[in-house]
Image 1: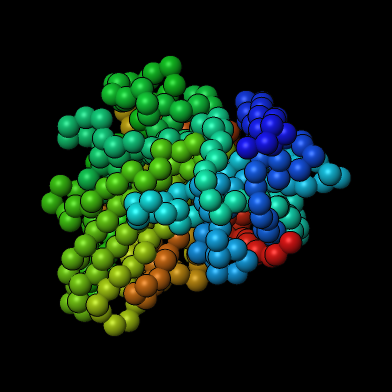
Image 2: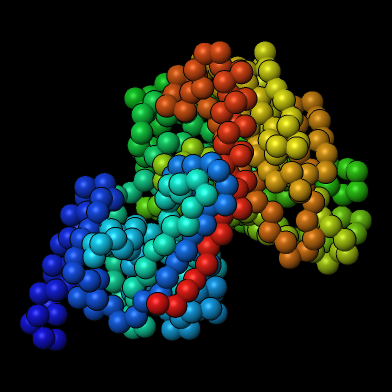
Length: 399
């Protein structure tokens, strides 16, 4: 390789490494092509709403790139930049393989989108070889850490979640940072990072799923419920991703299979759940997350705005907490109330992907609504639902 190209690679590698170490700061160069990239195309991200979408999680479909602008796009050798006045600002991304076939299916990034705007990024790539960035880790996922306890956990720097026999529980954090690598620890006692603030009991906790067989609710949580096969798909650094697979779920209309992708994104407190439905039955399948009833609770369902929210007492010694599920109003059918929780019923046909989010808050943690807590938590979730439900559009164009 010519000496000038080697020097260029070292220069850009140094610039990018320095930029990442500085907290995803700007990386400037004459052109990213000195890194050896041979081709490029444009990624346009449009926020059609009048809302500023701060630290918005964006998922890019790799198949969509190859189908529209770059049939030879290589997810092992690419980088996204924002170009302005001849300067290039690195956009840190992560490529994820959802089916473990060693081919990446999605690229994710976190970016603030101004109101009514289109963000234009340039993707540089080469069809061969590989290139890897090492950004600061702000998301992490892992398998279980104690026999009989959580089977998986996933977190961002702001919030952490765990999967316990189909139930979802939430950790309150006292400060920005990752905690799951420290486990096992006494989670139900206050640690230097915070504590487990949800004791789900017999409830769904914060988002445990149910399937409806006609009018009968079939919980997918608890020791006697159908058990999911869990796989940690990505331990970060931008998105922590865990897959739960339920197969052979019997209903009067036929068997149903559900694949749930549970993820936490850097700089976000929510857990995003993408549920892919497979079914032999005709007609829509009804599923949905449950939210635990809390002692001394204040709760509300805003079906037209897409959220179910509760504020009350959390686990022992935790104090007060807030729980919420956010969903598309177009998917909503009804609410199903049980002794221990409330669940929203969402409908989708076989082959559909239904997305909902769950989020928690702790009066003592970094995700705290302040006083008056119940009223502020409602308002916070309302604003969060508005932003999460914005139909952000991603398009690819040749350059």
